[in-house]
Length: 421
Image 1 (cartoon, rainbow, N blue to C red):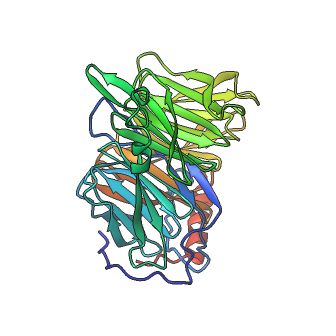
Image 2: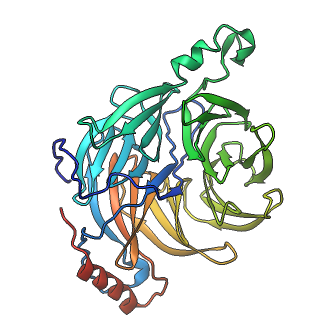
Image 3: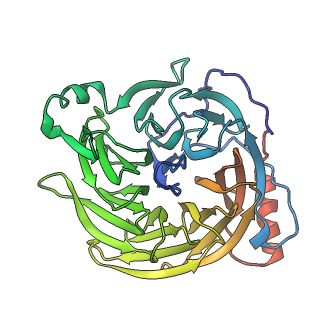
């Protein structure tokens, strides 16, 4: 385990955030009011030109040559969600704590969010971090290098202003269960997932609704009665929202130009009597993958208007439920309750070819986040588990099973990068 280090000022030589971002998704299963967590996340590109990683070379086949670089311990509860934020890795847990790990040394930089309830979802956008908690509220944090308190709470959603503008009018209330009403801007159950796109925040909940928030003033703009069961995963891309649910469906939502509200564009159905726990999208939103409670990965391809969809793949990926997924270029990574991570190569037609299986966690893999950083012919992958740990992996890109090819990739990485621990 790496020792934690005390809070210290940021170095000007390392950019905190940059404008370029790459979305990916980390979601997981839920059932009613259990303490299960989901989290989509947005990763940010940052400059690693002066940071070096040391990856030992082992003469084994490429399909087996992933490297475990670090095991980060410090959470008091299961790791529920991950996100990349500049040179930081953020990990959150059911133990109410959000830990900030600083690269390249992967040491603990600070903590924030303590006392706000179990963290269910985490996403970053620009210099903002949004977290969803057990109390069904979203908290907005500002990231600033000029402040000693780098992660500063700026508001809680729904905001007090939003409440005051609506609580007096009875038409603003909706009935959630017998003898119980709430404002339509409130979630009535745990928020399981978050997504951000085009200045909007989307929240999915076990109350079966999606709510849309404006990032500029945190006002709730819309509440969508989306599914017949708990929503487990959300992805937002180019004004289109994709939601995965325990009702076994992924629904595609598009924004109407005139009303500026969202309407259904497509319904993608999985196997009968399963929960879809995670969703990721590729190729401008036309290619969608869902992870199911039966261990299967399913893929669908949509037309240019996203109104017509057809199934393109269905593979038995894991022995137990798929809890999370993320995309990195031509690769799809899936994490499972069977404690393994599978890395899949996406073919031109959307089919999936198994690239490798990563093992090491002692509990179900709850969340995944891939870094856009390319290291020695591979990429960095971060995984969080119910075993309370965050693990850092190096995954090679090569698809050949040649031993020399795999060894060369690792040797090149060793020459170029030196891991600072």
